Length: 126
Image 1: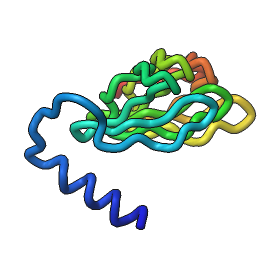
Image 2 (image 1 turned 180 degrees about the vertical axis):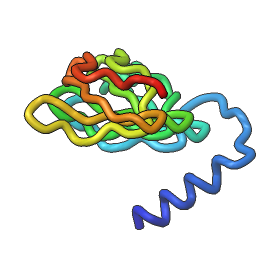
Image 3 (image 1 turned 180 degrees about the horizontal axis):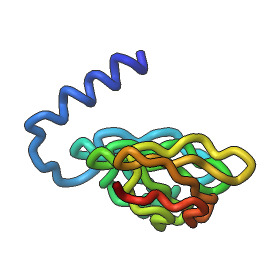
């Protein structure tokens, strides 16, 4: 069923017109917040319906230790539980955090970041 819904959302994004009003989808609330989907983008609301993150990401991962991966325009970044961008989407890949660090990849180069988005090993451009 989840696969069917994902396919449905994917196909519904092509040629989507602007919508006024509510959301296309409101996910389950976890720790007082839920993901919302509107006009082919995901955001986050709280239990009062206030937008913590407006729908602007193609993907939002699960929150772990107060942070979540986000994806837009081919790049990954990180937001905190208040919706602040800790890392602006700029990496082609962000691997899992292990012992507080994650490998990141962009433009054929690897680097490392910590959970706060600080580049411990900078990704140098070619």
